[in-house]
Each structure stands twice: as structure tokens, then as C-alpha cells.
Length: 494
Image (tube, rainbow, N blue to C red; front, side, top):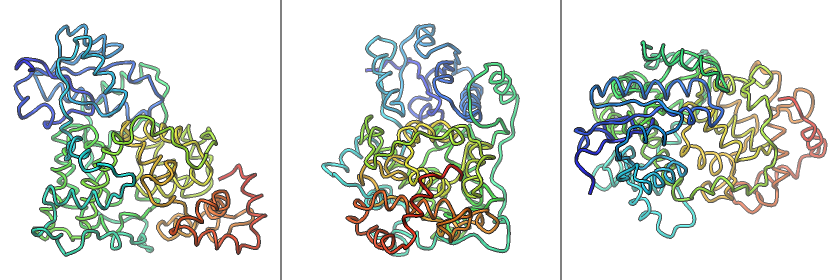
């Protein structure tokens, strides 16, 4: 049994009251800045800023309870602290193995269940049972029932579980932005200034550019960010959830993934606030349901499948994708890219470390799928180049959803599309050098042509899938298919 005075060690993604409050509110708190963690991978510069800012703000907010140690490694800091600590389950396989080794050495007294998600890991294990195929919709409905969210007794509010069909509108055509109130933007302070100076002095190998802090890193900031989203942006979130506008990087998105993944905002708090907005007639049901599905459905689902599928999941490569990530991609060289959609997506990663989910899936992921980029390298890139890309977030999102590299364990079909989809859902194609309607020629859209090259490369697999067999039939009727395949095999410009 853990002693009542055992200090609590918080990782940088466990910084909220769900971890250090409640039954642990009396405990001393240990925070560690480990140089080895900052240098281990090639992270986005703004991601490192967010993590350090979150840790140092947590020290300030916790006052006398907190001790912040700076050391080369976590182990060195724990030895210097010289007292066994209590810790909650960390959020990656490697970190979990690490804390168990620390426990064997007596540096960790006990390891507690993760409190920063709605559903405990043991409950998901019971739900998963002996399943060999997984559907998010099944999980999502059970989550709604379990937590009594948007329910009227045993039935969903509105007698529908899913309003996805109402959340797929194209962007408004006669305006360059969505024209909604801006998202919450935190005010940088002396802590942020010190973080920036320290990072400048460390000479780290990073990607992206430095910039103003755009995301909440404290519980107080997260609460303000949530309130602003619910009050001013949620009503238009659903309709344009899947749309892309070149001059409006945030649109109506919540920008809450960073505080959620830092642990300073609990998912059920976000879900409860959204449901209250619907119950109070401040937001339409389709928008509220779409947001709740992202948080209580998809985010929780990805978290649990990360653990369920295990540490070897990123070794999956069912489509035999062997192309290394090109330098222009890895270095976020958006200026070397001609296609508007791809240029803007890389620009968003370079300048902010963030793009919304459709740019991730249907632009960046779609391009990588068509070109056969290695899924393990792509997973690593998303986890390090995105400010919300913690280790648990990306394997199932990239390997399973985006790249179909698990052979259909998670998604029922590959998410490949031609330029027509991007033209419908964005304002990028009108002034692009490439024509989304063309698959052959100097101005042939790399997504349109690439779609047919991908379909041809995987025609046997796609023909066996009811959801994709029509694409194979359409490809077989193309009179210029051989020319398209030759063109795409030589393409080095996008």
C-alpha cells in the first residue's frame, strides 16, 4: 500500500487536476525536464515550447507542492530527488516499460491507472473481448450509453446516433474565411519568454519555425479555450468540420487537442460543456454530436486501440509501402510544393505544428498512401512534427486509418481519393497549377493521377472489397491508363 506522503511524479502529459487533484491533492508533486527527452527525436520547435511551458506553468500553479528538476535523464532526476515516487501509467509503451523498470529499482513506489481518459483501460479490454475486427461506431455508441451523453433514456437524442452526413458541407464559395470569432489565444508570459531563450540556447535539431504560443497549456487556459469554443465556434463546427480554406487555418475547430493531450483538460469536461450547449439551445445537435464523437468516440478509441494492438503495431505494412519520406516532406519545405492543397498543409505544419483532421487524412495522408511512403516513418513524422502528436496518438491514426497498413483491422477501406474530393471540400483547386479534372499532362493533378496509380498497384486487394471494387472497374475502362502509370512512375514534382 502506497504511503500517504509519497510524492507524485507527473509526466508532461499528466498536468491536470484529474492527475494531481482529488485524492492526491495533498501530495508533493515532482516535475522533471529531461534533456534526453527533448533531444531524442527531431521535434517541431513549437512542440518543445508547449511541453516546457506546460511543465513550468504547472510548477508555478502548484506552488509549494511542486519541485521541478532539470537533468540529463529522468533517472538522474529521480536519483537526485532521492525518494520513491508515485506515478500514473504513462501514455506510451516505451514509457510504461521504463516506469516498471524504475519500480524494480525502487525509484517508483507504485503505478496507478491513467486518469486522463474517460474509459479505463481495463474496461476497454472487457469491451474488446475476442474481437478481431473493430468498428468505431460500436464503441462510440457504447460510450454514449455508458456515460449517458446525448441520451434520452436508452435512446439517442434525436433518435439518431450519428449526424455525420450533415457535417460534410463544402466551404462557402464567396468568402475566403469562415468568418467566425477567432479561437482562444493564450497570452505569453515570462515563462514563455524563458522557454524561448532556453530553447534558443540548446541548439536543438528541430523542424518547423518558432512562433507565438497558440494552444492552452494550463487548466485555466484550457477552461477559457473550451468556453470560447463552446460559446462562439461550436454552432458552426459541424457543418464545415471536413472543409478546408486556405486563408482560414482554424475555421471552427476547437484547437483543444493540445490541452487534452497534455492532460490539462479532461475529455468528459469538454463533452459535458458541449452537451450543455445543446440542451440550452445554444448549438445545433449535428455540431454537438460531431464534436462529442471526436472526443468521446474517436479520441478514446485511438487511445485504447494503441494499447490493445501492442507495441509492434507500427511494424504493419500490408500494402508493402517502401518509399522513404522525401526530404521536402521531412523538412517541411512547403515552398518546394506546387499543389495548393499539399503546400497549405505542409505550411500549416511548418508554421504552427497543426492542421485539422481532413488535411491530415485526405491531403497529407492521402498523398503518402498514393505514393507508398513507409508507414513507420510516416507515423514517426506525425508524432514529432505535430504539436498534439504524442506517442499514443499516431500509430492507429496513421497505420490503421490513414495508410491502411494493418490490412483492414481498423478501417474497412483505404482512404484514397483523387482531386475531385479536394476540389469539393476546399478552395484550393481554383488557382492551382494542377487541374483536378486531369490525370494526364503537365497540369495533371498529382492526386487525380496518383489515385489511379494507387488503384492499379493494389487492384487485386481493392477488387475484393465491396467498398472499393467499383474503383477497379472504373480504372479498367481508362483508355490512357498506361500513359498515366508511366507519368506517375516518373513524377518528382507535386
